[in-house]
Length: 419
Ligand code: SF4
Ligand code: SF4
Image (tube, rainbow, N blue to C red; front, side, top):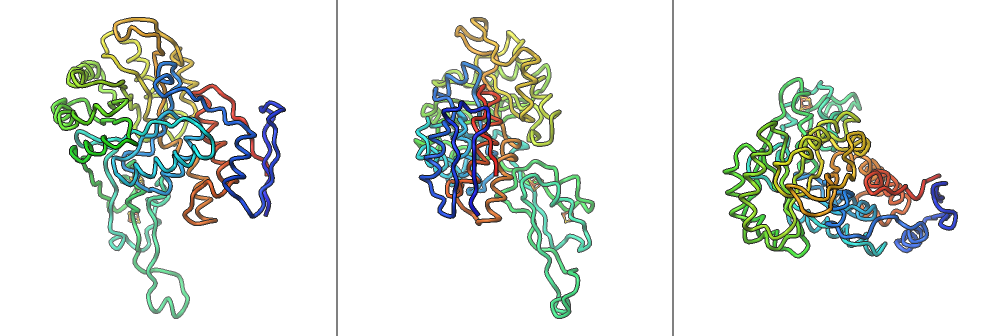
């Protein structure tokens, strides 16, 4: 069935288009359409975005390793104009991110976002997987774990008994399937919901030496170190192991939770450890309420409160501040209410440069959710495929991503989609 797309009234009239796709969807169709619409993504370099306070990072997830979704998410959000894509420190995942970026750049000649890999200095919520043996699950369980998982990372089939097969009766056999490991990103929502306490948490720490090798890749631009901030000894050990490879980078980020009064002093300790070998920009990721942005409006409150406290401090070390953890489409509105959105400072204890108090925002669960719906629909219709081959899905995903990225970049979504 042919699909018709036309731009919204927000578009300047000279850019209005009405393109119909028949069965021969092609990359050229997409190129022509996007060229005629005009993607409003900024072309300035990512570090200028940080200075201007309109930096946007897509978080694919430190533990999310579904390379098909990661490639498609990277493609869509590159077109939407993100400055950075943060992913797991895994060679296949990094390659998928870069493939998505380069495919996007074949569609529109847009600047390349930085690629960041995430590692941990110790046990951390972002570096864990859920695990259980479905054969141990009671066959009459209503499977709330499957419903609660935001990543569609739990899936079951029921093994039919021979009698059931012969009689065609209701299935009561053992469960098969369980956690799809590469899709689990460790949010933890399934752990408390299992009525039989069957789900285990498996934590891991990324190997520092393997990470150091990944940082030498020419398609990796940045590293993010997740830390609790409580044990700077772990941070020091990891930094020492990464030290030689950090010179290849454009940005070093440290992601940390709000530990109250101890936060600033641990930031200063970590900065003192990094400073002698820091030859690039550095950033503090304020992880308000980890992995919760998809839950709803209120999830963003903690990251905003964290940012308010840090922005007011004169004792914090140098480095851009960026929100994460609970961020969603309501975050900019919350920052504006607190007078922190693109509010510039001219000088001070932490900087001699003109730049924004808050460098920008990272979006994880929320960003994946709004585009993930489109990807799921595409996969159920066409199987595992590149989104550039399905113009109707690409445009729908672009609309969603531009709605989100545009809140920070201050541009209007240039097109609506009507069927
Ligand atoms: S930890 Fe989160 S992502 Fe992983 S299986 Fe459980 S609910 Fe799904
Ligand atoms: S909720 Fe627990 S018992 Fe039920 S299917 Fe899920 S893991 Fe198994």
